[in-house]
Image (tube, rainbow, N blue to C red; front, side, top):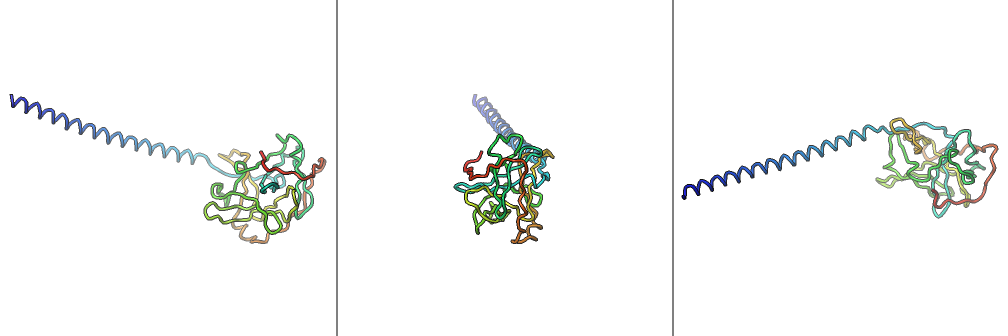
Length: 236
């Protein structure tokens, strides 16, 4: 009777050991399977990111303008004129050049393209998308308004453009400094509505702190002037 009991107890011990080994093995296999699946997903995400190629498309610089909008703080608005459509703005005078905001007087859908915040414009430097590295700001300094790129890493500031003067309560044209131009963002060669303020470091360094004077203003013909003080503190 004792022997039978001992044999039964030994069998139970062996069964328990086998079960423990099986559970442990299964558990380790399960963890390994999860790790492999997570690694696979990470690779897939990286491949998806690589699949979307971000680039830029050249645009006619005469058909786009950066505007300093007055308000409690200055705001940057980028306006693009769609060719052969009603004029989106007039330019009046020089140093500073006042922008007559014709786009505020009619439904500009399909006529003017407007970007009012970081969803619509960003910085691109030396052929790289640096939208996550720099923010754009419009500030008043030395009797003019300046458009600056602010580094999110070290808060350094780079002047992108200037108004060459001030005019109380008026929309003012921002002239881009040498080495900077407008381009359009592309994804897999598809042109988007997003504007890049695209800079070339070598051209920027060559220009130094003394950019050229602004060119003569362009006045679009056959347009009804709406020249008055307008504010857009909360543009759409």
